[in-house]
Length: 128
Image 1: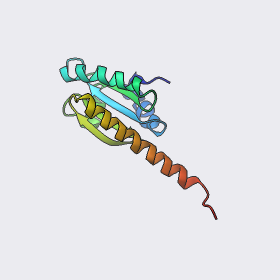
Image 2: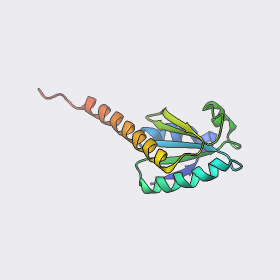
Image 3: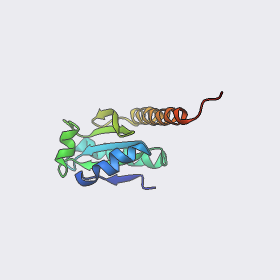
Image 4: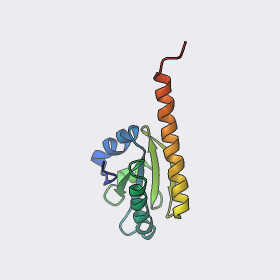
């Protein structure tokens, strides 16, 4: 499974929205000139490998994909958005500590998993 990839406007719906029904997608909107992005980016890359498939990292260059940044009201960079089951469920701005990132990711993954479990249990026939 590819854990980290670049996203553009043409493939956003497929690689972020649709994919988030299968696995939690962390959307990182940044820019090459952004100093906090250059700090956060490598931390997210390391964590996506460490978490080994529990989430994927979708990266957007805001300068090349201004519509995606605008649609997500990214007023500062980096803007990081958690997608689960086709919807944004959380976000943060600017570079953060590793401790914050781990808490954010753990909560994000737990919410995604809990939502999937609820959906699966609704499909199970009730014991009579």
